[in-house]
View 1 (cartoon, rainbow, N blue to C red):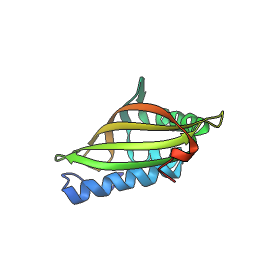
View 2: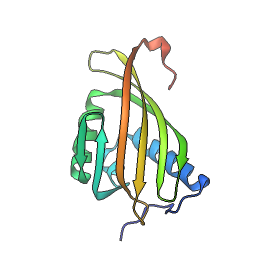
View 3: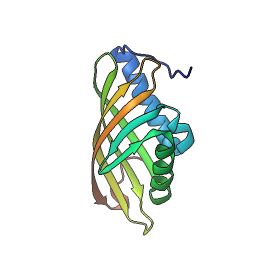
View 4: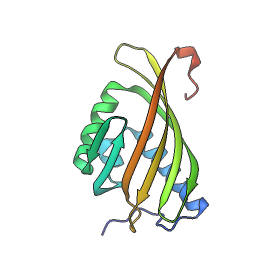
Length: 137
């Protein structure tokens, strides 16, 4: 049986550990590694995309990081309950035309008893920035 520590119910400390683990995972830009933090049948809403299961997660992230070069993410703990965590985040990336962007968003996460994320709902907004305006280097 797969487990991803820490397990729910979360304390503030263990919720913050989950947030840092997610940040580190996404900054690896390794879709297969990232997908292992999610249940086999995980449900996502990412902007206007609905993604179901690890295979779709890997495909989505592979395409994402092919288009979003120099990707750098920062997540911030917002709140938690027993098996749910809310975060805010921002990330920066360079598109295929060498233009820089910053994305801001909020995520709501729900975990199963083994500490795998079974639901991820993300609301995200982008802005164009100049390279000199980058904060996440």
